[in-house]
Length: 479
Image (cartoon, rainbow, N blue to C red; front, side):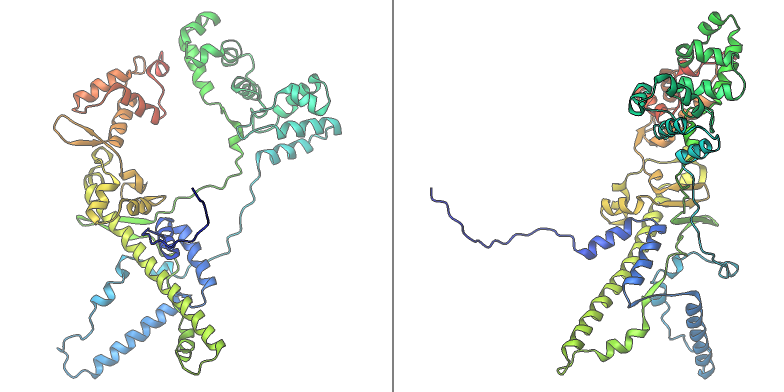
């Protein structure tokens, strides 16, 4: 068979996401704080976009008001019908914006200076330099600090540190005890047992019952074998229980007390407020820049319309301005479409979860993205993008939008119960149980069956683990 190179033309149909469509999907998915930064960046890059500030907006309103007054004075018939079609103004979503009281419009905005946060390693190194240690000891101590992870534990074996620094193992152990004396208490430990012992030593509670339980019977303590510990230490089980409660107050990961991460604040993207018997959905977008086409370029656009005698430079200017103008219009339309879509999705959630807003989490219904997408006639992926990483402030608290979506569990009466509701019921049963005889997963499943909820024991165990609740044998107390 002869093989040769040749060229062929074929036509195929495929879906391609244009850059504008990709931008629209990105803006739909980002939360309000990130959208604010994106729009400010767009204003810097596109000269035809400008941000509408409150002063300009107020001046426009004053002009419109004065024009209306003049028209009213010129009108001879006071009963004449208003010629303005207000529906055109109401369709732009202006009623969806959050009302800003006049007292909040004159706030003084100060420059936000980022706060420098000290990391755990920096804090330990700073404490070491205050100890006035010999250079050799300080070098070993700094190496040990570099071997401490975010939990505050030393993760590098001592023999490897001694080999890397060419020092004796005894010297590394000695310097390690200096590092373990630093703050926060418990830092520099090699395991959980040593971490807890260091914290008790720092409290001056060495050789107490809790210290002996950790030092001599740590395995029994982890498995909560309190009767066995009481027999070995010749104390009462109640004393062991009290000492275990004190141990529970210690910090197993002291390194997290010195965090270098900035606190994460939740800013709700949507607001749901109750007005009389109805719930009103609003966007919390008062800090999002309001964009419009810059009026400064109107004369330039008018002067650079298509003319037969236009020069090459004028044609290039016209093409540049037209490109930026189309991009600006598309961005403004995309932002408006984003606002409408978010409100439409949230209104659907409020309708479906009306009993939750009225009565609480026990009445949260099972809901899926596909169900919402069918009701608002949108694709499921669009609803998923709307709910991704966004929060809503409601009379019941602040929730992530995905909180309202969960699978359902069947009941005896034929209705479905949300999995979140089932987890809340399980938490309530465990909180009200007799601590001396805690409820097993099987017993919890039986109690849920009595309530009409069809759930298996393994499902109870899964939900209990999601709630970070220990099994029954580890929850048992003697008093």
